[in-house]
Image (cartoon, rainbow, N blue to C red; front, side, top):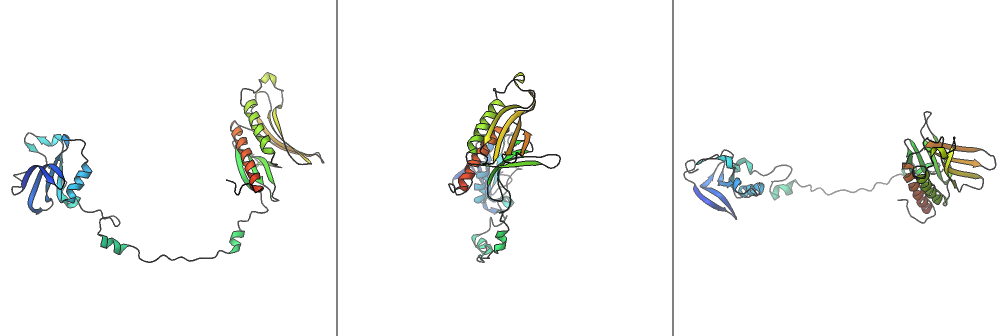
Length: 292
């Protein structure tokens, strides 16, 4: 270094504004591209140094930096080819406004005041969201792939409980009028299904009827003229469990039902629908402001 920079001042443990370089070379006058001088740090002597922070410190005080590893030394010679020179490494970051002076940044800032304008929205726009006269699904949970149970509000405002499934012809669904007491019926039914359909209480094949063995049935509240039930059955002793929702008109004798296989996830779905049905009635009766 003395041969390459004969007019420079060379110090061991040279001081640069609060930091000591292992070797510090200082020029009589700033020299391109090194700046005020060169700070040499022997990194292999202290592996814990913050290289980025130390380098930035020297750049801020107009010094170039050389970080030396053990393999940079050969007998009495040192490889200084990896010097981080002040120019161009210490140039400020020019992305966006970073690196520019406060005056320049202030000139670039938006000075136009924001404008607020109140625009009335026509009532017809809000009327387009009116869903009166439509079936509105409040909640829906799967009991199998492409099969679900759900809570739906009818066009006339009644809360209904129903089931639907996809078929090759498009789909089937059945809705029955729900009552507040049905929440408990659904919870009890879910517990029974978990036990006798998917749990240890499921009967052995030899204990089952040969066809349509009834595992459990919940009689929902229905209405004065309509009987409603929800059942879990086995079409055969070893078959999958089938969920059936049905209703029968006591005056006409006509009935309607929907059946679908159900998977173990149906237990959680039944519990969730029961909870949501309870909250739906609370909202309808004004006990809760919104259905969350």
